Image 1 (cartoon, rainbow, N blue to C red):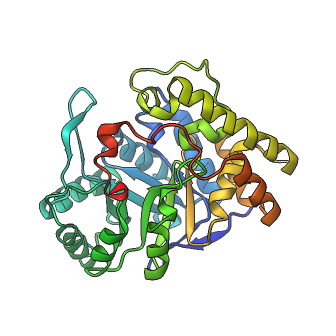
Image 2 (cartoon, one colour; image 1 turned 60 degrees about the vertical axis):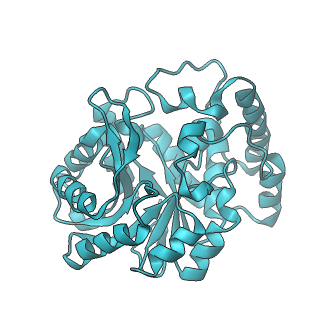
Image 3 (cartoon, helix red, strand yellow; image 1 turned 135 degrees about the vertical axis):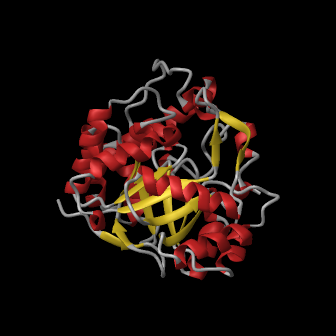
Length: 335
């Protein structure tokens, strides 16, 4: 297959219509197979998927080193590396109680470590994972602009920020894209964030398009999760919430069957169909899941199909918040 490309905002790079989120290869979704992860990264690039998203805190740097190993025999210009920073970890693998440091000093410090771990002299898109209320976004973006002018980063991105914050940041320097959770089960960005992005010519990279696996069509109520799996503590995967959400997935699956696609493919295709300025990220950790996700780029949803999908999973129908309450409180995008 040939992966179509999309422009990531007015000022951003040209990227594959579907990107690869690498977090699960090192962290937060339970054990992963490193060899299979590297094979999956190679398969993604071979299929034309050039956008790879990571963060310096995924596996406390292990994810960046994994990507570096996978890219060792590749041409650097063949990939667009999107890297988040700011979250702080503890030696036991946990997160610090006040986790985010996005100060100007932290921008330069964390960037230097990412460049070394990724074995590269530049990062295509660099962004704070979250904001810290007592650090103005203008200060963070100002430091990013300095690093951009110095050639260490090509583009500035943001993540999980409100419409007001987007405007303030864009007044300091051009923003390529905002990364935010967006799926059939998470449609909050539609109210103010997406209209603001379009007004300013900023792209959107959508993570969680399969709602952490719920919308994949492969989830079962009996699946056991390890303590270090994020989903073991996610409200949408608990008790009656999980049962209600899986009923929505069953309804989506029936629509997908009529369309000759899998449930996950339709969920990804729905996000992609919301605008050519939106790039879904899929968190495939194995080649078989990657291949299924890649086919979603060829799934075309006409108006009738889109109406069927939205009837199966109406806006606001998700049971439970996308994060536990303490994490929800850290999201500028939810304010």
